[in-house]
Image (cartoon, rainbow, N blue to C red; front, side, top):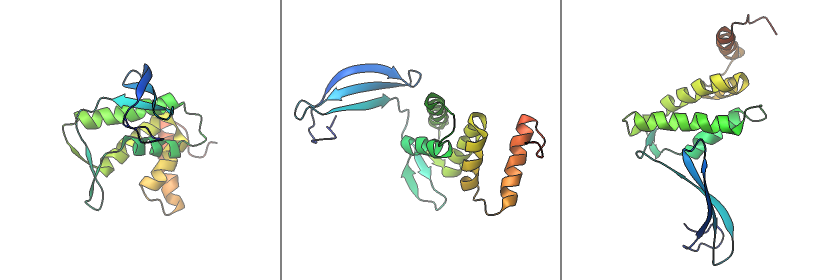
Amino acid sequence: MRCPYCGSLDSQVKDSRPAEDSSAIRRRRICPDCGGRFTTFERVQLRELMVIKKTGRKVPFDREKLVRSFEIALRKRPVDRDRIERAVSGIVRRLESSGDTEIPSEEIGLQVLEALKSLDDVGFIRYASVYRDFTHIEDFTQVLSEVNAKIGRDPGDH
């Protein structure tokens, strides 16, 4: 593993432990050349996934981009980091086990929406406003009606 500080190709593992519900291994490493310490994560990857963008362009799937989407939607919300990691891991597992190596970005977006709906209503609405490209207040009203129907609340209740 290359040292992020000095670029040395040699590093030593000082500690390994399971992470993210044992779906990854967290390793603490030290560089013998510069003494820098850093953490790496090792995950099982069933197949190399490609994302097909709306423009038709294909890009490699990036798990970290998926994590950032959740973090942006859930910024300043009371959602535990472990719940986000479980949701992301679940989406990645479903994508990898689908049998397809090329996944439309819309499919990933729908899975994120579904996961956010069960995690946090505000995060769901934030993500939906970008994903569905809201342009009018009526767009928010429609999604709020969907959320309220999910929890059995009248849209006029506060």
